[in-house]
Length: 96
Image 1 (cartoon, rainbow, N blue to C red):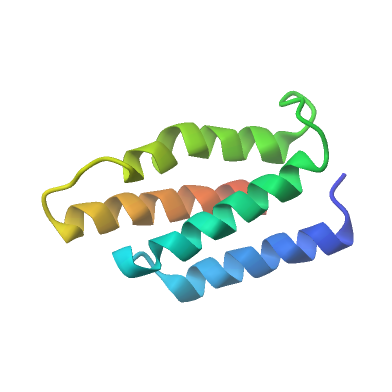
Image 2: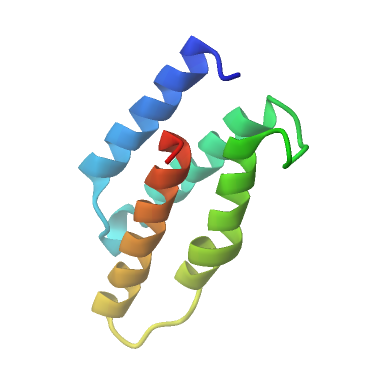
């Protein structure tokens, strides 16, 4: 279903996530990669029953991504939430 070009873009996003890490300072770049992946997935339609990548990304958005918006007392707590978001994000674009 996903073209070779888009699959390679998703792989490049996944590799970029590995390089960026889960620091607060790199979270903005992680968000941009997330929304780039969402736009790639939306190119295949908005039906969540057919477009499994979009459905998976929407689940990540409603769960782990929203948790990253919570106010945390320490940077360690924030980075833990960012790390959880990145792990779920990488799983969703790898198709696992």
